[in-house]
Image (cartoon, rainbow, N blue to C red):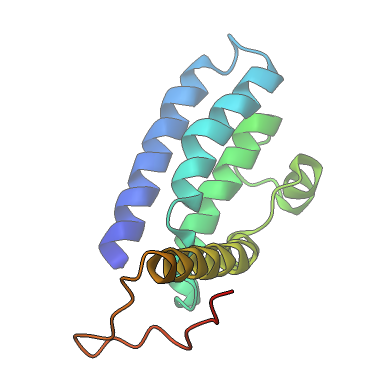
Length: 140
């Protein structure tokens, strides 16, 4: 997991450096759109597996989010970012992870129910290889 976070952080900071070079040429709305598409998607990708990680690893991802907020709002390096994140309506990294986790779990549960219903309807439900698919719903 350390390598995943290291590669994510380094690629995000590389993208932020490229965006910093063009920030005077584009409007703030365009810069916000670019940051959202290039940085936020990388931070949010696979965020469910980041649940329960130690704080020092999440802090590295938070530093990327802070740098992105400073870039979009034209703030200096040592300016506080709490109000910048609030103005941009961005959550901190632990909050983003805990927000994404229930949606992922509900999507998995929905997919599993659909798979079971499909297998029941075509008569392929098997309990082989020691896999327990849970209680089989009554077919009506």
